Image 1 (spheres, helix red, strand yellow):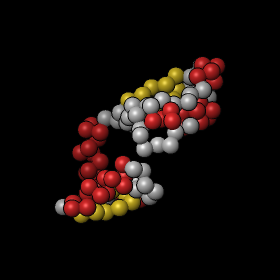
Image 2 (cartoon, rainbow, N blue to C red):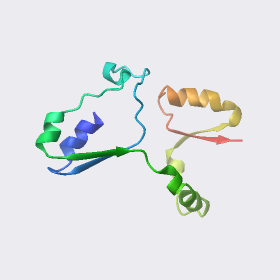
Image 3 (cartoon, helix red, strand yellow):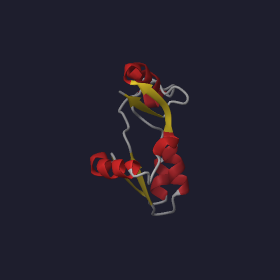
Image 4 (spheres, one colour):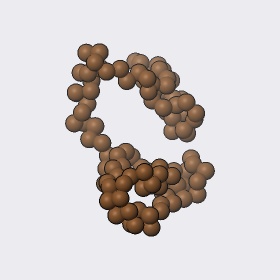
Amino acid sequence: MTLNRLVDSVRFTGHIGVVGIFLPQDSNTPDKLEQEGKIAFDMGKFWFKGQKVGTGQANVKHYNRQLRDLIHEGRTKPSWIVSHQLSLDEAPSGYQHFDARDDGWTKVVLHP
């Protein structure tokens, strides 16, 4: 659905960037195609609009230290995305909620 909406909203001959991790199969979704690692993509509209798509994972290691320093200096506050703060002992349970995509589980901070 997201990719099709991007095709709709991006101009003719525009570029779409998909950054993230997309697993080949997802047994936790009700969508049959996604369970097989497939999506329903409107290739015809994408081709007609002459768009291009690039994919890949974000280069997290490149930005780790810079982001850490911004947080430490108080210049950015990523806390708005944190949904839960758990002890290290609660990590397995928290991971299960996150992995199952339970409502409200976006980002979890673990405190040792």
